[in-house]
Every structure is written in C-alpha cells, then in structure tokens.
Length: 122
Image (cartoon, one colour):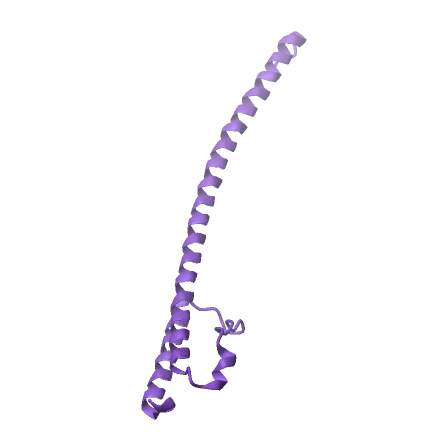
C-alpha cells in the first residue's frame, strides 16, 4: 500500500482486494455447502434406516401380540386388551433387539403355559 498513488488507482486496488476476498468467501461457502449437503444426506439415510428398523420391530411385536390374542380368544377379560398396549416409557432405553427378545420370550412362555395347563380346553 502506497500513499503516493492517485485516488482512482487506490480505489481500484482496494476494490480488487475486496473482489478477491469475496471470491475466496464464495469458494469457502461452496465447499461448506457441499459438506453440509453431504452430512444432511447421511443424516437422512440414517433416519430412514432407523424408521425402517422401528417399523420392522413394531411388526414383529404386533405379530407376537396377535398370536397371544389368538390363543386367549375365549377369555372374556382379554376383550379389554385387544389393542396392543402402549410402550412403557419408564423403562431404560435399550436396543430394539432386547425388547423384541423380551416380547418373544413372554409370548413363548404364555403359549407354553397354555399348553401345559390345558387352559381354554386345549
């Protein structure tokens, strides 16, 4: 930077610096935008995978519920329990596989108890 430059030359020098700085910022913003877009794509894919897994899990639990309800079809007190109960939100969070296994074990225990005890005339 020199003070002996005429004002118009100084103005062109300063606007050139500003133009270069703006171009650098545009390039940085383009790179950041691409990175954010990529991260958003990854997050969306992970969310879709999670939702798909949750639907699959709910389907398994619903199948177990329907199996248990079919076995207890003649029990009148079960009429109030036709819709599947809502999840208990007070239990600690665990992987879905844990809860699927728990539900499967409970259904199998119910079916075994029905068969062993001869409940419902079976």
